[in-house]
Length: 266
Image 1 (tube, rainbow, N blue to C red):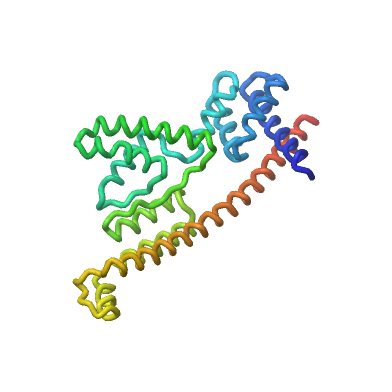
Image 2: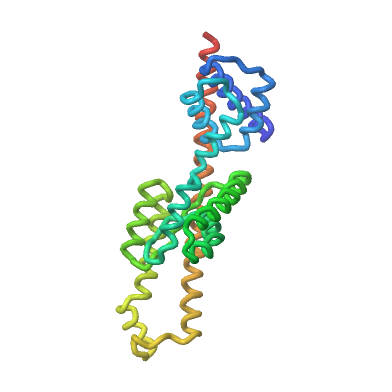
């Protein structure tokens, strides 16, 4: 099947679900309007379209509109809303605490940190939310999915607890959880007294003596290479997962279309 025909089939499936949703809400919608809405919605993943239309069927009391669908798609992208993001940012600003972060939260926190450091929490919150909304708008415009990472605090146990929470709440998968645990366990070991004793044996220096700049640079380089390899592996696995999800959702849309066709035949 050609790309063009596949695209046409997908648009037809989206159009059928839009039409059925409008009927559930008690009104008809013209074929031209359905076609335009399907074209606009085709930019989004099938799962988000299906869930947004499901939410419309359950929540709307008036007519189905493109704005109502897009509003619900925006909520489904996984990005925290501004007030929740501010609470996360406050936690991350405590160096002793570990926190799950996104790039958008980190950018907004950086923009508001001078105000927060000056002790003006109200002003910092306003600056943060303004910056975060801009970042969020840009990410949603570019269809960037949310991506969580760990902002580690000083306490190793706190890091592990936060990683477990991230997995439990669906922020990361099992593979990412394992990689984060390995990464931060290694970092904790590198700063432990036991490793200091090993370094003393290898370098001939007392454990209390600092490494030279060259030794610190080499250690940082090795850690950076390891993290980069882990990140590349994670990105590859995420892409494979997205491809599997797309295939599954295309099959789901096809089944919806077949079910609608059977209903219309009766």
